[in-house]
Image (cartoon, rainbow, N blue to C red; front, side):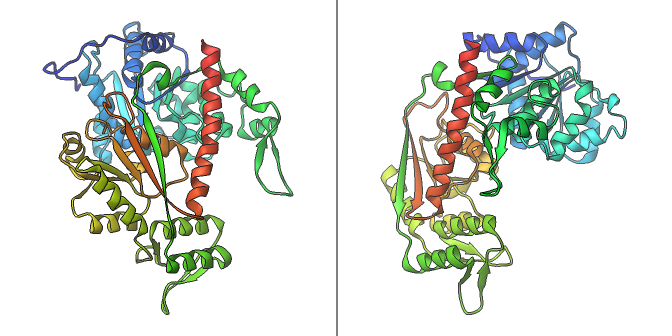
Length: 456
């Protein structure tokens, strides 16, 4: 059974807010722990779980987390001197995963993508489920009741003593994303046993004007009241002294050719890039993606692989930011593969966060320009030691990814004020994305502030 090395260990003296979280875990109940980044959710959860194991209230613990965060759980177990937990990492090939499951351990760590495989391994008899405690790190990834991962967990929920859901963004898309998470905690006692029932009770449909569901008056407060006893949120600004975060939007004007393509797509959903290449947006969702591509400076062809560059205005702005940084490292978040390729072409010193050793080199100050996609670098990577300047070359629609990505630099351990530049094309979809992120943030903040008051 793998155990941590005793060579490098750190003593753990929990803060008052961490003691509160530990005590909640030690009750043996199911909870949603909405802890902001930097508040030590991993070590506090492991500390509480270790007590449950020692008291024989738990014996087989499963940690389900994003792939990039698997290493974080391992590092935390090995880092803290008070933890004496054996662990097994259930990743790799199927043979390696099966071998890892045969290892006798206290904690089994598996990435989210392999969860369905693990549950299907049980066949038609979910009562064979061996884990009495399931910890889900970044539980907002289970916000949709339609996903295979949620449906699989729902099958084994009756055979699980407790769920501990960890997230910094419990409702990144609004209150509807809470139903499936709360269902795992209580089996539907608070928000209903089906998502349909929840939606009918708390929402109304705007048909025939549209097909959107909107909250009924006072529904948000009723939802929060019903779940306040099993959910807690802790906000970093209440407990940590973080450096200032400066959000700096920078606007560019689309060059004439790019503006013509943008308008043509916007009006007709079709644009001619050349005599031989025409781009067609099949629906509104595809159209928004193509408009964002044009804003960034390039557009994929119909094959989805090749692309045409339309302008370099955002690259020019980024070059100015890098020059003004005067040698200070800069972290750049991009959205599309052609963004990455164009960034690499313009900035020869750029390094991808996926390159082996890139994170370590960045934190040592050896990487002047680090390129990262928010979906791959938004979780489990600490970059605050390497720099304090980040740039959004192109925004994405996900509030969760946006907040998580920003927290790579703006977190505990950051010694300098953080500057976050957002490069936006004037009168384009860029501004719509920013507005949508702001609106989702409002719902998120309402939830966190309410639960914080209830728990006080």
